[in-house]
Image (cartoon, rainbow, N blue to C red; front, side, top):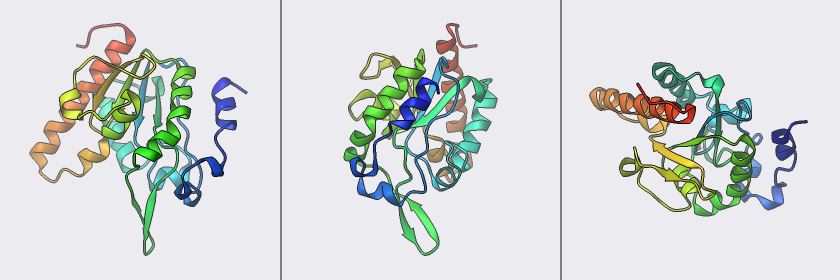
Length: 201
């Protein structure tokens, strides 16, 4: 059993998690190689991730794969995880609708995320969206103004920010969607270059 497996085995019991977490199918942990130079952190698993037990395999994950490919970043070389490890949702008929985690939810999961980052030991963490940025920086920061800024996590790991792929999927205007996707590709390329210790092309 490696250190990440040992950490997952110590995951907090249900009594120590938010009440809503018990309705999720399972916790969804991160995946990728320990020692990955670049770590991507999103908000929480969605419906497909909850059922599969893997992060970023739903619509947002498929878009992330496309953006990573365009940026020349092999997903297998990154460690991908979420701040919140359970799918928070409301039931609407047969559909399970995503609910955003609140500050209390983020606080519940933050110690596990910090331990996860310490074990992976990335050179750079890229926050995907506002929830991840808040959890990592320890305070609410606007993603738009934080893009390109040299930030640090609460534990001093270099931190950058970009939009979450799910936000891109919600853009209805094709031109805006293309522009924002191009910006995310640039963010991913720059983060990977920085984490790898080289200049972005």
